[in-house]
Image (cartoon, rainbow, N blue to C red; front, top):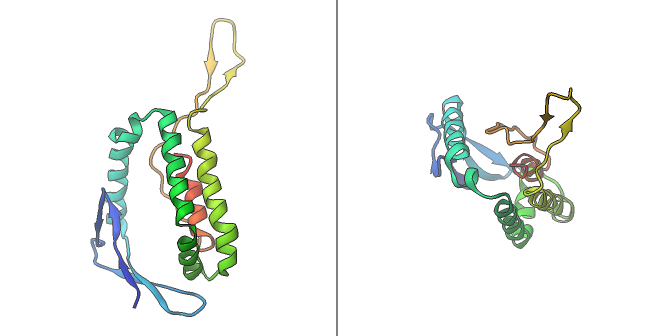
Amino acid sequence: MGKKYQLFIDGRWVDSLSGRTFESLNPATDEVNAVVAEAGPEDVDLAVKAARRAFESGPWAEMAPGDRGRFLNKVAQALWEKADMLAEVESQDNGLPINETKFIAMPAMIDVLEFYAGLANKVQGSTLASPNNRFNYTLKEPIGVIGAIVPWNFPLMLTMWKLAPL
């Protein structure tokens, strides 16, 4: 049997409130990769509340854009250092050939993170045409906490598409 994984909620690893789990299978071999805590609606509610608190009052909320970019670049560097191991996990999780995860999925995932690291201090809006007595503009701002469900193919890359723009 594979390793057991819990849910990460509010900075802690926890079992699901229901105690339910599921087996993550290697689709190429049908072997169990891991036993994973199965989040239910109550777990999701706790996670969303914790994420909202962190979004509104955590260090990220007060961090300067340039510092955010530097932090994201450090994460990208750490991912490059673990790329071979992550490619192996990705391959076992979704059944893709190792060369596809190692040479396509991992570089693409890290490229997305590096792209958004470069944009972190370049948030800008537009001035809009308006009557003389008005000034209209747009400013792009984070929308806050989101839930993202990603399909089985390239889960790390698809997850990064959701996380990196934060």
